[in-house]
Amino acid sequence: MGIPAATKRPAFGVCLLLASLLLFGSEVLAWTNPPARPLVEWLLLLPAYLALSALLLDFIARYRVRDLFGVLLLTGIYSLTAALTINPLSMLNDLPRTLFTRVMGAHALIAAEMVGLFLVLIGGKNRPQRNLLIGCLVVGLAWGIWVKNWPRQEGFGDVSLMTMLVFGGGGLVLIAALLYVILPRFQPEVLVVDPLATELSITAEPVDSLDVFRLKPRGWLIVLGVLLALIALRLFREEIDIAGLILCPLLLALCWAILWFRGRKRGDTLLDNRLPVQPLPLPNLLVAATVFIGVGILGYNLPDIQVGAITPLVLIGLGFTSYGLAWLPTLSLVLGVQGYLRQLATRKM
Image 1: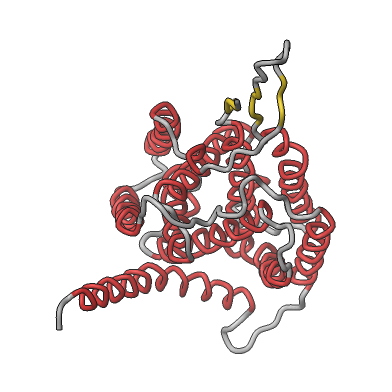
Image 2 (image 1 turned 120 degrees about the vertical axis):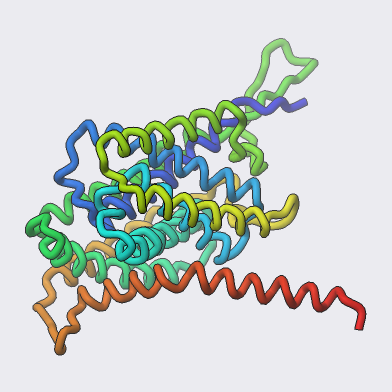
């Protein structure tokens, strides 16, 4: 007879990994000037990223998120909440422009990339790595160009190549440590009771139910308490203006409503065949990290190229803005057409 033990442990380990990836994306890839953050601010950010990670995992399990549209909605919810709790000064400082360029653009897009990387890292055995390497090439090159030029344009001052590599390499080391050292310690055990034995024996049998990711009332209390406390702190510091306090919750409610509408009680999810966690083989991760860092250095050292008013930094900014303007209207339109066609199909001719 098997009795599940510590069923919350696997959820916490996976939550830690996803939180580290979200932090790496928003703080290092988007470069919200992490060297200037005081220690006290980091102590506030860590529980915020953990709370957002737990929220995304709950939504994946609760609404059976299974496709790209679901990921877009999840990362939209993440970026809108992060704008109110984590980086309001950076993400909401010039509304409505930054709503589309940073909140719905840069941070939502990078969060989608981090969710994709998360799925590769926890289910990487026997999976083709071509897409991972292509992603490292594109994101690494953009990262190097972005970190060299954007902080100067934003008024943060120049960021040295060494500073960029310290934060980029440090983030990758943290992610690797969580994946290969910390996460295995959170694999669940099952207490096996043999009625003929004189002692209890414990065997490691994985629990792959998505129920472990669904927040219980106490979990909801902790997650919402952390996020609401941070919003209150940002308001007290006058880091959020009235426009941000209105627009972000409205868009967040819209994303949540669409996610709820698409939810199902049964069916496949993004986490299928990834639980129990099957870490990406370490050599594959080392190759991907080397490619990422290498092209990041290349992007940082590229000579200044300008054709008219177009520079590589402008192209990256246009990409963020286009994504921020397009993804939610496009998703809403596609889902609306799909729903209308389903209604037509059910009517009698």
